[in-house]
Length: 191
Image 1 (cartoon, rainbow, N blue to C red):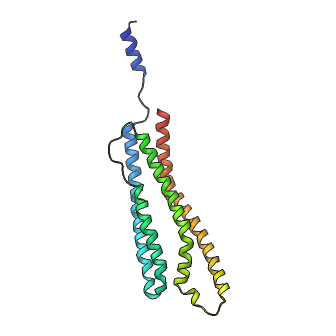
Image 2: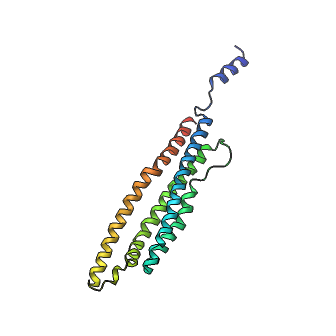
Image 3: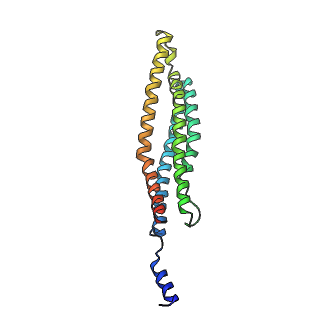
C-alpha cells in the first residue's frame, strides 16, 4: 500500500460532526418563534395590566401610588422580557455553542433579574394598594391593628407572588431553557 492509498483510507474513516447544522438551525428557529410568541403575549398582558391599574385611580385617587408602581415595574419588565427573545443575526458557524451559551446566560439573567425585581418591589406595592383602597382611613380600628393586618396581607401577597412567579417560570420559560441546554449539550458531545 502506498502513501496515497493510506491517506484516502484515513480521510474516508474520519467523519464530520454528528449534529446536523440544518437541524440545529430549524430547532433554533422553532425556539425563537415559540419564545417570541410567548413574549408578545406576555408583553400585551403587561401593557393591559398597567393600563387597567390606572382605571381605579379615577374612583380612588390614592390608588395612583399603586398604579405608578405597577407602571414602573412594567416599564422595567417589558424591555427585560424582550431582550432574551431577540433572534440571532448571521449564519450558524463554528461559534454556535458560544451563541447558545449566550442565549442560556441571557435567559438565566432574565430569571434572576425578574425574581429580584418582583420579590423586592412587591412588598412595597401591597401596602400601596392597601393605602389606595382607603384601608387606613377607617377610624374604628386601632392603628396597631391596621398596621398588623397590613403586614399580614403583605406577607400573604408576597408568598403568593413568589409561588405564582415560580410556577409561571416553570410552565412557560423553563422548557425553553431546557431545550437550549439540550442543544448546547449535543454540540459539546459532538466536539
